Length: 435
Image 1 (cartoon, rainbow, N blue to C red):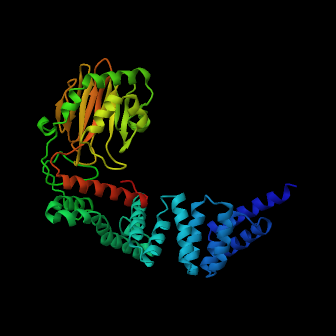
Image 2 (image 1 turned 135 degrees about the horizontal axis):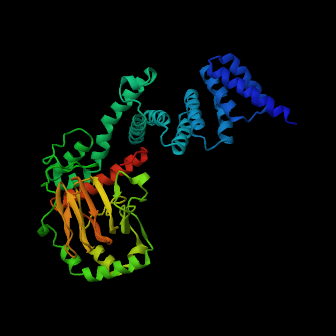
Image 3 (image 1 turned 180 degrees about the vertical axis):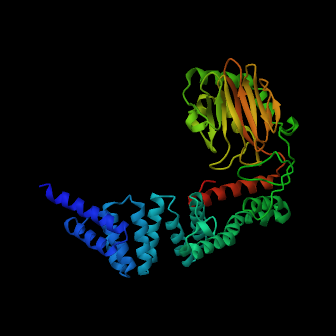
C-alpha cells in the first residue's frame, strides 16, 4: 500500500533534479508521470503550466493554473503565474484579477505589481497604473533590484524604465490634484509653500534646510521659522492645560494605579527589537503610554476613564489628520530608561509636553539643546531636530505628549497639509508602501 506514494516521491525527485540541471525534456516526462498518478499535484501543475506557456500553449497553461489555484488558493506565486498566462491569452480582466490576488497575498510581489500596472495603463486607468508601478519599483528596490542597470535583468530593463517614467509623469499630477479645490478658492500665492512642500517630497525640488540640524523623515514644509524649541507666546491654549494640571494629574494617578490601557509606546520594550531606540541603566528600559489618540484615532475607552482630561484635549487646536495625527498620550518613562536620539516625520506638526510627574535627573535634548521638565509647565519642540530623553531619577517620569500644528502655518496651509498627507497615505497604501 505504500509502494505508489514512494514511487511518486522518487519520480518527483527525479523531475526536480532534471529541471534544476536544465534537462527539461527529461523533467517534462517525469513531471507528466507524477501528474498521471496525482492529477491535482500543485507543484507539477505549476511546472507544466510554465512549460506550456513557453511553448505557446497559453490556454493549456491557464487550465492547469486554474486547477492549481483552486487547490492552493493562498499561493501568491500560482496566482501571479495565472495572471501571466491570462495575459498571454489576451484576457486582461482575468489577468488583472489574478494579479490582484497575488499582490493581496504577497504585497512584496513586485513583478505581479509591474504587470498589473501595465494592464491598468492599457485600460487608461492612470491612477491605478501609477500606484502599482510605484509599488513595484519600491518593493523591488527594497530587495536590491532595479537600482541601476546592473541590478535590473536585461529582459526587464525596458519595462522598468517605462514604469519609472510613468511614475515621474503622473504621481506629481495625482498628488497635486488634491490641492485644486483650495487653489480654486485661495489662489496660487496662498498655496505656494504647500506646492513646494509637495515638490520637495517628490524630489522635484531641493529642501534647502536653513538649519542643518533639522531633517524630517517624511515631509518638509519650507519657509517656516526654524528652531528646536518654540516661544510660549505662540500657544495661548497652554492655559487650558496648565490651569487644569491638578485634575489631569489626578486622572493620571488613577490610570497608573489600575494600569489597564498602558502599553509600550513603540509596541514593545524588548531590546532585541527596539535596541536602536531605547537603552536602560541597571534595569530593562520601559517607555510606555496611555493613549487618548493613536495615529489620529480617538481611543474612546481611555478617554472615558479620564473625562476631564479628554474634554480639555477635545477643545484644543491640535493636528487632526485621518490615520496620522494626533498622537496624544500619557508618556511614561521608568527609572534608567533612555530614549535614544531620533527624528520625527514632519515640521508641519510639533510636539507639546505637559510635565505631570517629574523626579530629579530627567531631561530632554532637542537639536543639542538640553531642557529639564518642570511639572505643570508646557513647552513645545520640533521633533524633526534630532532629540533624545532620559530618566536618570529614582522614580517614574510622566508627561502628557500631544501633537499640535506648527503655529507658522496659515489656515489654508494647514488645510493643504491635511489633504496632502491624507492623499499620500491613500496612494502609498494602495501601492503597498508605507508612508
